Structure formats: C-alpha cells, structure tokens
Amino acid sequence: MVDRQRSRYVGGSEGAPPPPPPGGYRGARRTAVTAGLPAGAPAAPATLTHTEPAIAEKRSANVLGLVAISVVVLFTLTLLLLMLAGGTDALYGVTMITLQLVVVGVVIAALATARGRMLGAIALAVTLLFNVATVGAMGALRAAAVHDYDGTKTEEQKHEQAYPGIRGTSSRDILDQRSLEQVQSDGDALMAEIRDRLTAEYGFSWVESGARDISPERNGYGGESMLKRYTSTVWTTAEPVRDNERKRAVMRTIDEVLRAHGMYDLYALNEPGSGISDDMVAKLYGSADPEQQHTWEWYSDAYPDPMLLYVTVYDLSKDRTGDLLAERRSYHEENGEPLEGVQLVIHARQLLGEGDRAEFEERLKEYPGF
Image (cartoon, rainbow, N blue to C red; front, side, top):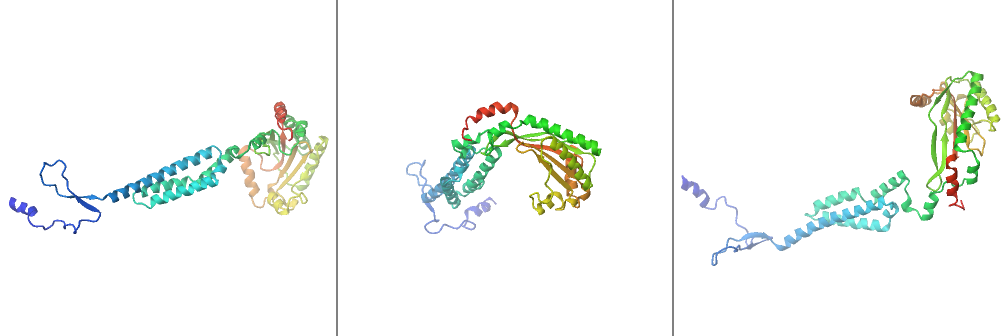
C-alpha cells in the first residue's frame, strides 16, 4: 500500500508542470545558490529571479508616484497659506498658474505608470479639491465675509479705508446737523404728536412693534464709517383704513403737523409722476392706479436734515392676489404688527453719535484733503 502511494509522487512525469521553454522564461535568469555549501559540494538547483532592468523600472515608477503626491501637497500648502495671508490676487498670477500646470503634468506622469498609479490617483484627487481656481474662490469668499481686502490694497488705500466719514459727504455738514440722539428724540416727539392728532380726529388706537435699529454706514472706501443709520420702532393703527378719501384726509392732517415742525408736505411714492415706472408701481403697490392699490406709501423730510418720516397705509380689501396678506401675516407673527392700517416710522442716515464727536474730529485731522 505504502509503495503504491509513494509511486504516485516519484513515478513518471504525469501531473508535473511543463518544463520551461528553451533558454528559460523571458525576464528571468538562472543563478546558482552556493552560499553556505561545503567546499566541493554541487551547486543548488538554479532559481529564477527578476532581471535588474525590471527592478529599476518598478523603483522608478514608485518614486514618480511619491514625487507626484509630494509636489501636490507642497503646492496645496502654498495655496492655502497665500489665501490665509490675503493674497487672493497672487493666486491668479502667472507664476501660480504655471506651477499648477507643472503639478498637473507630474500627476499625469504618475498615473501613466503601473506602480505609481495609486499615489497618482491620490494626488489627482487632492489637486481637484485644492487648485488655483477653488482656493482662489475660497479666498474671495473669505475676504467678502470679513471685509478683509488688505492683502490687495496699497498703504494709501488702507488709509482711505479707515476714513471716519463718508465719501462725497461734507464733514462740516455732518458736524453741523443733528446728532443721532437728537434725531431719536425729535423723531419720537414728532410721531407722538401725529398719533395724538390722528387719535383725536379719527379715533385711532396704536400698536408699537419692532425695535430701534442702529447700524454702521460704509465710508465709500471699502471700510466702516463712524456714522450710523437709524430706524425707529414702528407705530400702526389697530383699525384698518379702507376708504381712499379717508386715507387722503389722514395725510392732510399729518401735513399740518409736519409744517409746524418745519418739514415738507408728504410726497406720494405710489402715485403717477413719482419717478417710478408704472410697471414698478404696480409691482410694489398692487396697481398703477392709486384707487386700486393695496398699499399707499408717502414720505416727508426737511432736507438737508437727515430725518425722514414714512407713512404707509395697508389696505387688505384691495389685495387681489393674497401676496400682501401673506407678507403682513409674517410681520404680525414676528412682532405683533397689525395686518393693516396707517403706519408711521422714522428713518435717518449718516448720523454721528454725541459720544463719537471728539474722536471723529480728531481722526479727520489725518485726512486734510477729504
């Protein structure tokens, strides 16, 4: 039994692999292993090894992949550092675009080799995520978000950016006009007097909504001015006013109060001849015909004084599309503002706070020609 089992392995050549072709397999050579054998001992059977050219080819391909990933990483870090330093314009320079082309060439070379293909693919993915175009766009968005354009401005432009006033506006006029605090106080007093008159003559009751808003003005040089923009709280009648003749009567009463305060009569923005095209009037107020409009908007000022009074009348009975109702409901849900009625609000721009006056005058000394 044992002899028969053994004969299966030491017998003929059935089942053995075919002998190599004459001269051996291509790309391999026979070498005798003699290390560690006694002197005079026969050499061990020859073994197959890769030729030196094949080894060199593999090494060079792998090195090319490493070079590609290294170049891409270095280039990406350079782009990100330029972006963080504010050099958005430099990203789009000839030098960076040329370097980007060189990087792309190295990546393509790595992809063309078998051993370097994996690292080349990784390098390509990084290049697609971080390149001149994408990092430049990121830098522009970052600069816009934080108003940080210093990386592309000269020292003169940076100086202008810090201007405390507003380009094209006389600093003398700003100092001579009413302060932010005075406009707040005078605006509150004006609206209180108007409310009292309208309550006495028309029986209105009033609802206050919203909050005062004070926000900085831009100075026209890419920076922030010391001057402020002001919007008062909003006062709206709890009762609707839907008769057009009654609306006009309300406006005449308000004009009487305005004249006593040295302001002009109300000017209708919603009527023909206001300087707004009929198409835009219809879009803003529901119709080009004031008799059919769901919104009337009037305003008054005492130019060059900065304070403006806006009077608006919302009339849902003339809202044919329901758009005004949806808009008014959003305001009502947000701050309790009545859906319709007569509304009063004060706006003013380019106001200097009383506490900022000394600093404003001091900083103006740095801008003698402005």
